[in-house]
Image (cartoon, rainbow, N blue to C red; front, side, top):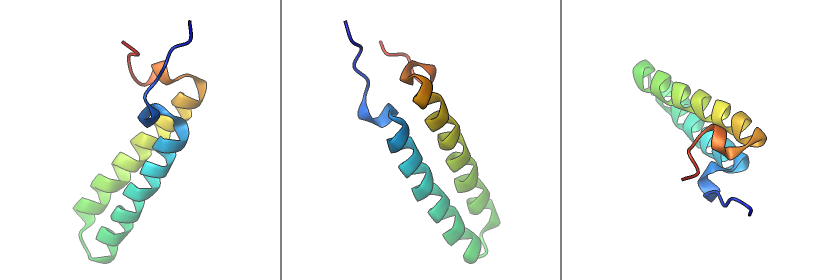
Length: 65
């Protein structure tokens, strides 16, 4: 029986979302809002880590049940 995982747990989806977050962070940095930049950068880094784990298996980042 093959497990079905949400498309939001696929590594490519997580990678694309991290790129969106880092773009928001760069926009905040250029506006001089360092705190917002740091927030978006940290979220992007978290998603990059999840993308790497998802390459191994999606259950490493979320419970399939």
